[in-house]
Image 1 (tube, helix red, strand yellow):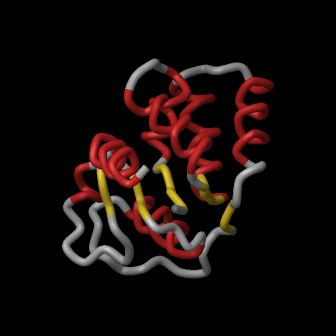
Image 2 (cartoon, rainbow, N blue to C red):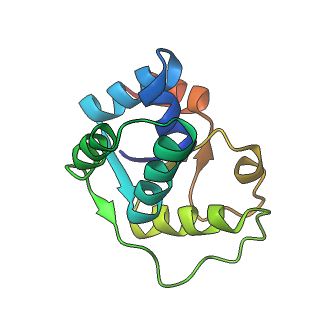
Length: 133
């Protein structure tokens, strides 16, 4: 299964032990993690500006993620009516990456009434992947 982890899930997975870290390990070991240039740019920003992670550490994380399939920035957004326009770009990226599942902790995205692919939170993804295992 091709699993697209939103920036917030990746940040949680990288910074703390817990469900998101376990989910990232599960996806990397038994599925295909897909990401995008949009998420990598957001990740760089969050890790640098908000977390104040050293640049060399950020670049090592990005290099690791580039070993997985990475979609280019989409030409257009999907016009889903999400409150945050950045989320439109991320979802369009997941579609471009041919993801089977989009995982986010963002309630605004999870509330999308007409998503272009299945959406779930980290717990829902964990349970789905473990039961399908």
